[in-house]
Length: 236
Image (cartoon, rainbow, N blue to C red):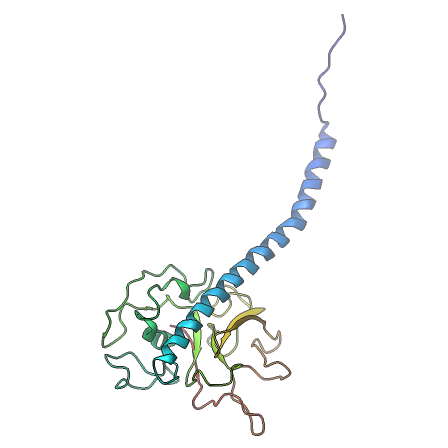
């Protein structure tokens, strides 16, 4: 009678296979993570551009001006935004006529928006901001004092900054660090937008061809934003 033996991996062969799989995984995981982050940034850009389009619609109905007032029952009678106002106050005017959902103000992983919004909106004509864009329901900063005829390259909406505006944070666990100070989503006055590179030294988005931030006022002979009028409002 013939003996039949079962074919099987030896321990060494099994360890070699496991090692090969581990090596392949070490190459694949960073690539997968990078693809995931890029997809999240693309969604961030899409949401910010929707906000930009809503701001353009608002401007069309308000003599070309983007929101420049604090929440109030009547826009024309409301008090002006100040440099200490949160961007939530400016975006409040987009509801409910131009936007109906708070979802597009949230970026997953951003410390500005640690949870999902409740989508509770103040009634039209409300005298103050109560339910709309409460603390933790808005990721985006806003540049005040602009109009739909301002320089199309002027920034209007951007990912929220760190406590030091207009700088981003390298830590993803900090506000302004959603993209680890490598990229930032910026929407311009014409409602176009880009995923822009952050300067690794200054931690801000520089103007193309300049060493100064795109969010900072210009100098004599190089007009840009007016720091006294176009102040940057961080989220709340």
